[in-house]
Image (tube, rainbow, N blue to C red):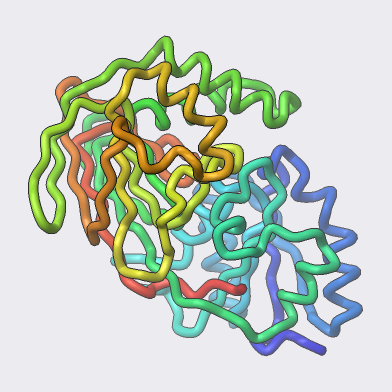
Length: 307
């Protein structure tokens, strides 16, 4: 058995995935070699370095790349594969080798697997074309910017949790996310959000707005159980209860049992714009990017994922 997509390049963030990315490589490479899949490794740390590693792989003629690390690593690899809303090369297949607590898009597509099983899947021909999110936002310097995202965006409470999680030591593991979620309550209030959707405009008082393609966020919370990454629409959730209600709901959110709820409004739309006074933080793929106003759109079926 060998890869139907040619040589595989593993883009490894040694600081990603709770620093477990490098540790899992020997077992994964051994399993890939046993299946006849040729591969090599490119290590990179930070957004620009990871994107450069992706572009170098494509320039080298590689059309099969894997993001090895956490959700942020997948985010940066995907951003390296696109420019001006077009892929930088035709026929590139992206695989996800999840090494972190979250592994959220990998959970949605069934690719959060141990090395032996993952290697078997990486050697198989199965792929799916999924939608790629585009977010336009304001950075900390007040400049308008944009980037791509693969899994989910969070505005308000969820983005605050992302910020706080990044300040806590990775050695805390899953407890790190719980501490950040608890601390986020104290830093979050309900705010009047003005939303623009495909079918209507809305004004809601909400703690958080989630814009999801995948079902999972954070440390594997199934926040958007009705999200599908290939249907051309976002699953949009506005959490309209009090901040402590969002935290309490995390127990049910592990299994996606928090819906339906009178404190959560839900829509399906190919785009959403959000504005708020004061501006709220925006995070995508568990990476803090900037503040509102923000607009989220889709490039339907733009990203070819290994499944």
